[in-house]
Image (cartoon, rainbow, N blue to C red):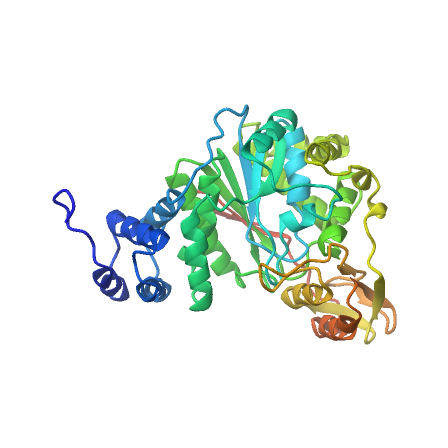
Length: 447
């Protein structure tokens, strides 16, 4: 009993949730605080998380859990920075390098991008790993260096700090070992607690769906998108989500320096059309949410900023400010090259009618481009360059991909794994959409 208010008991919270009850704001705050301080035993933490996995959470519960997690540590105060502060977050995929384009593009168009990003784990790549493949580039900044970079360039990107939403780190580690990662309210609160703690005005969520995403169906992707948008709006942030395809890698490059080079090609006015189009849509939506005009006007601003070279110059400025060598940005062929390069040949005549993006991502991990645990080292030059994608015709024996690695022992297994990820048919498959839907606070617009 504190100040006349009865202190919750974890036994009662677990019982309530396992029977489908709704936890109160006070109960959720008690749970989060006890997890951070370790005052609640791990077995009771795990029991409540598993009860949530089975019973789900209401929108109000999810929002209150997220706020409690957000307030479990430090929060960023960006009020001293000029302009509208924006953030774009992807739920993770294979070959997803859009942040490397969207961040400098929107900064060059006048928005303020003070962004913290994460590292990759498993088959999904991380923006920080990609940036660290740029020679000299530092993602470990002091807060003064971070703020100075934003003031100087309108843009800075750094790694997430342990002081922001520490409850998320503890709860995620526990969810991982009890097989409770794939809970939509818990995923939503995990992502949004970090986004809210980062202090931006506008949050745009890129929710991936398909074989290479955590959400395998558009129905689940919409549920997750709606949950996160509701949380953001509940917290007073302008929040929307785009649901985008991850049934095949985005672009042609999978791997850190390979993906940076591809993003730079887009900033140079070249590069794969799907990467360019998705980056423009995300950028235009951020401009729209920031009040720069209607969606058509914002699309025009995004295209002009990209085509003029202003976005490329903004990326170069950020790289230089954070200690990197912008020579490789202007000349991406100068990135470090892997010592072992091997082509993968088409196994038969026909068309590529399916690509298991998750398996392709796992192939890149075998080559050294990703990590299975947070302590694994990454080879920045390792990865895959696709020569053929979904719907493309091929002849038996022609190259469909190129593997890059320094692990000679991994090359044969990686080639086998890649070929197993490709489905071949006699007829061309139906085209796929790049963008499936836009989720706003009060509606879903399907494309």
